Amino acid sequence: MDAIIKGQGDIILGVRFKEGYHGLLVPKAGNRFLTGLMNKLFSIRLNDCFTCYKLMRRTDMLSLSLGSSSFDIEIEILAKAIKKKMRIAEIAVSYNPRTYAQGKKIRIKDGLWAIARIFKFRFS
Image (cartoon, one colour):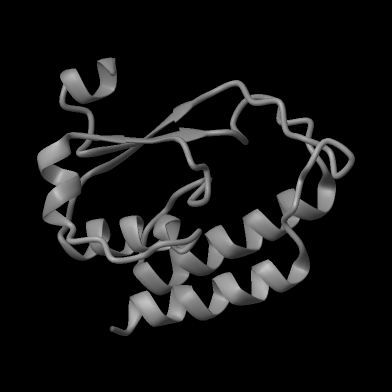
């Protein structure tokens, strides 16, 4: 909340990989790849586009006119915010990732689906 109050950004992302992430290698590698693709296609420099930890003012959220009803909301929020030239700040957060036994459900097919959505939101 302090970052929003202090005006550090219009959107604050809670970044999981800045301070000692100890999660599973494959999901981390997948996230790095997808974040790299977002960075390249949108000409940005972020560490963790798929963090799920996002904070913004309600008025800014409503101004994005979001339409997604699944996990592509992650991509849509950032894509539309970048296109609107909103300022994005990253703050390190502590994070304990789930294992597959604990219910982690992300698989390679989800990564392929995310790639398609990144291109969709970039070029729409």
